[in-house]
Image: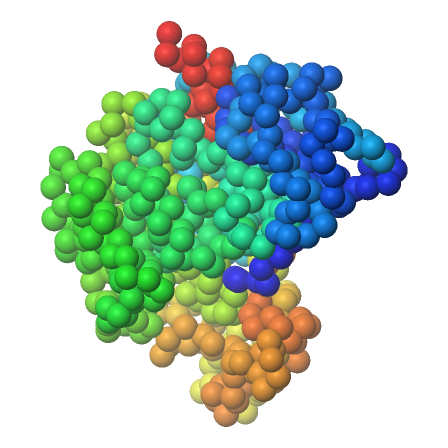
Length: 588
């Protein structure tokens, strides 16, 4: 879900008196030895270079980093000075005290620099179910495995992994994160703010000049020459996939994110989002310039595919692949395989996420130095925002099929691949019972009174799943009653949307507001539900509880208990030996 863009720094902390100073990276930051980052100090008054000192453990910063910081006397034309040091690193682990002193104030923060052991994993596969919550997993288990007398007839592959932990998802600015912020923490080890990725959000107007931190996609290439793959069923420029490589405070800057993809050149890039690769004026294009990035990727040696058939036909010796299968987000599995709704008529041959993952593994595994692959099932989140629980659950089943296929692939190779399965954030959803929709037996009972709770809930009667775990129908007479605790004003119909994804709201008459979508008002059984969110929220929102992480492979033993989202980066960095000492030991 997209939220208002952060416009300025939010962490202005007073020093020992007088002026205030903000330092990035922030206090208590944990930094991988040898990883690159930008150091920035923001002052709230105009100063001169000779009156400001910046030291690291008591030594002038220029001596520590090998170059002095750039001085900005009036940042963005304001009466505020700043200094910034780009693309630096610290190779030695330990405690680093960063002190800024001006004539009127002094402030000290502390960083911890940590190193890694020698490399243990050849590959890392990071599998992200965007917004995947406990209710999604439980519903997917019930539908895909069945349940008899209260016992599921099988386990999800993601639940049947040897290591498990809870992961906190809060960001630098809020207890509630978005996907950009949370994915960035996973792949940089640094927290950032809502809408930001790969940066600390500063006070400047430019969303691309903020202090950067290095991503794991950059690190694995620079340290070990590994291949990198990014696969999603959302727009490839969307928050989670973009966070693998992008550096910006504004996640919606799709044109610029595509340009950053091209600069980074991951070996495999697959998803939706073709519209922002096409030059302005091309049918379906959403770019605001004349750059043809499809042509640029092809000129750079990428095979290019737009359909499932073309994906299957990609030669086995292909080393670089760009796959763009929809102008926008790809359709979920319920629409693609069963209902033929959404944009399926316009894009009838969109591959399944399992097929995209299999092809990515084939290509990336050709690199003798190993690979990093991120696969996102992003439509789980988008459907849950729309209160479209059936589509979200079917995509959860698809995501679990991806998990199973990656685990099977890794098993054949031996124990050389770390696999991490988790969500980037939660949604406040729950299964509260079932909905009894047997109209023949009880024709005059309102839909709300058909919600069965506790013992009356019984069990749903979805048909037996097919070989991939999908029941053939969702409009059965006893369905899961799965609701969100965060609601905009909307009309609740208590029935699945068979004609396309749910659209609970529409733009309101007042600026920046939403109201209930009247198209559902007169559907049988519909009731108006007064929302509990402000009117600027046009959909259900994220929640702040911990998410579940399961893992297997070398380095997965660190996945236990309760972790911070930045710890996920450290688990991967340790397994791959990405620190200064780890990289040196691996090279030896």
